[in-house]
Length: 208
Image (cartoon, rainbow, N blue to C red):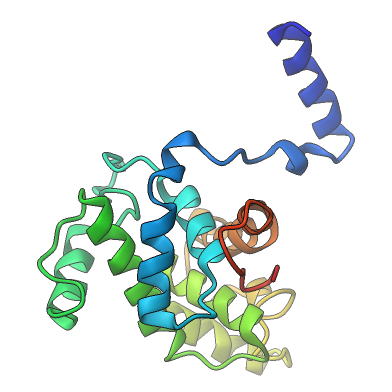
């Protein structure tokens, strides 16, 4: 099949609702980091670390490009802003070390450590929902998650459930930022994570 025919087929399948099956292919570049991500995740989260979740998160952040730089200045494999890199390095000087956002080893360790920091400060109905809140906080800030939870409560929604509850309210973000933040956990946990579980990267928070 020619490339043109394949492209047309993918467009047709996408239109029929099967596009997500082709939405992510684990990049070749990811393979060199697999063992190190597993080691770092288990060092911080334990043997049941949701490694597939972290792998999916890195895919979402940079597509596994260690030299990635966003328009707003986010850097490296895990797209930390410079201020966040310095903060996490200062918070965990022994386990994370000095900020090196373009160093893949540093980025992976900082990501699993920061995710753990957020996870420990969030209450949720179950581990999957808790990781969804964690990812929302990673993308937009923990204070926004707490504000969204309060608004959800006022609206009679379950403040411990992200999907279809807290995720539906907006406590003040711009429309563009709100859409981006809601898409972030959805893509990682409901689309990309399962690909890494299937490729034997380890457990996922929502697709064990």
